[in-house]
Length: 135
Ligand code: HEM
View (cartoon, rainbow, N blue to C red):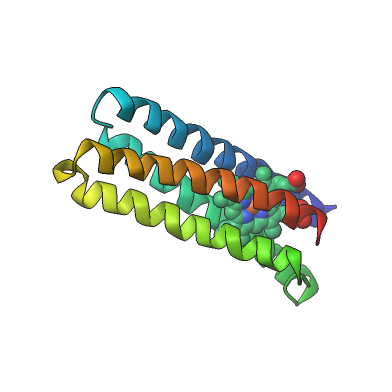
């Protein structure tokens, strides 16, 4: 019961984190169509990406603590997990680059950053379904 509750609570944060990375990246894209996107939005999206990685890793940690082994996944599920981890790295990298250099970039390059984050978020959300059902 205790471990199941832990998984469920982590999943709550992980699901809302998914909502944030998809929603805020898409919102950033919308704003960037008309104005310069605020840096605070990029900071929020970067934190949301980091939170996704952290809550995702916490699933593995809970399994390791209770079973003394990591989740036994392979094939499509492992591929989906690698895609998710790559999306998190890419999303954090894009937002960090925007925060560091974004003010001196052209409008089209700034748009590309928000497009990239939105695409990565949708890709991770798709991979989540494959991780769920092939593990
Ligand atoms: C380091 C990155 C990540 C790791 C390690 C990770 C790990 C996990 C794990 C272990 C689960 C539970 C799988 C299961 O129920 O069998 C899960 C579920 C889920 N993840 Fe992630 N995740 C990561 C990133 C992401 C990202 C970036 C998103 C979305 C943008 C995402 C969205 C979801 C969703 C929606 C579920 C629920 C799937 C379902 O039960 O149908 N994850 N994740």
